[in-house]
Image 1 (cartoon, one colour):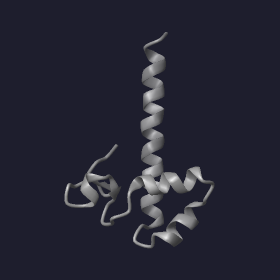
Image 2 (cartoon, rainbow, N blue to C red):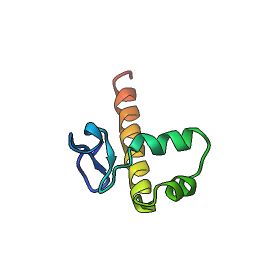
Image 3 (cartoon, rainbow, N blue to C red):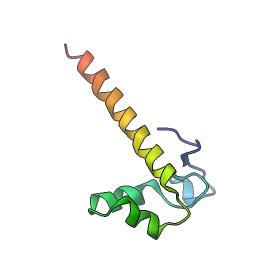
Length: 79
């Protein structure tokens, strides 16, 4: 994924190097925890106003691209 990008930041000085939404101290894992618990993106954004919807959507789109490319790569090696 895009470490130290407009979407994600990771620095030893912020949250001990945990991946966070860029410009915030909100760990990416917090969004995943919300979604796993059945909460909506709106619920997450209400709880973490320093993160904006565009950041969340960009993160999810990047995750989708990464997963899709992993699947394509994996399938091409087993044909």
